Image (cartoon, rainbow, N blue to C red; front, side):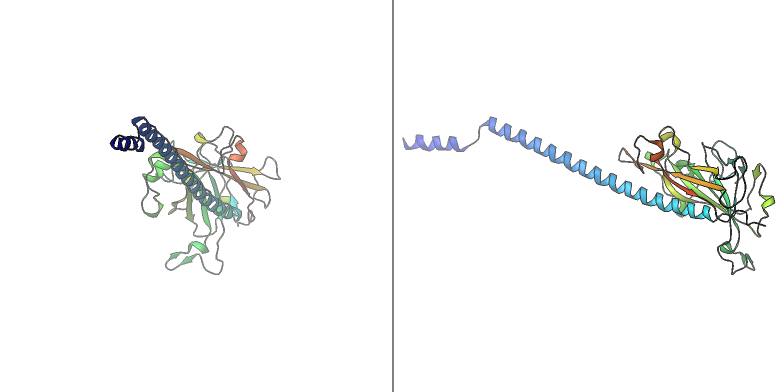
Length: 280
């Protein structure tokens, strides 16, 4: 009798096979839920970090470009062909010179005055960049084209997920003397020799990834004088419409944001050059 009661207690103290299976199933469900939460949290953190980095870098680059444009003493008119050379980092994709006002491959080109007027431009050791007039051009290139053509600090590194993005490039050349304004017109312009291109911003959004109707990277406008491109302070406005886009872990991160409004999908800043018309 005592043995029978002990055996009965042992049977009640154990788990049946069904109970074990149910417990295992519940454990699997809990692990799956926790795993999904961790993955979702990790993706959100990655997206947020990527977005913050894109936003910060794009704001720095845009502020820099706008600052340079505001100091310009000459802005090349829409329709002007700018020949920067045949290097892959300076030649417009498609095999021709850049054209100011193009929507497909936008470019803006200006002449900037010296930043230092207390020094001579030409010195025994060569030209002093900050004491000379400079030609500046800003334009985009396909990221793969840029990465395949540069090295050193200007090489952001290969990124197979983002080869179809753009990079924003600054081309800078130095004038040995102030260029007379009369020499800057015409349909095609070739800047001083010895210029070089450098990377300003990685992961710029190209038109192919933008909302329909999104304004181009650069637009130029006559603000006061209709029908004429006059180098007069207050007459010229250069608009920089910037959006950055990067694919991270299979997801597209875009700043300032995609939304549905094309105008709100770019950060827009207008530069009104204050020194135009001050060339000899």
